[in-house]
Image (tube, rainbow, N blue to C red; front, top):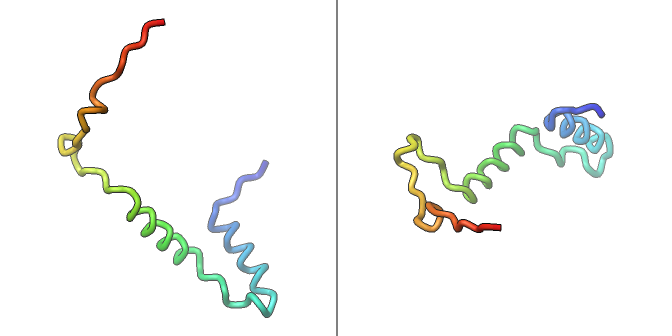
Length: 69
């Protein structure tokens, strides 16, 4: 199986779709799509702290339940 980078796949598909008059000019360049995708992702997930000593772990995640089988 051949692997291709996502920008290459996007560019190929956008070029193919742009060949038709009805979809010509409808696809933004991949960089714009990438920026929008990461802005959306940044809203959903908090930034990681710069230093590990700034990391706050809630008490519920500091211990585990030991199960003996």
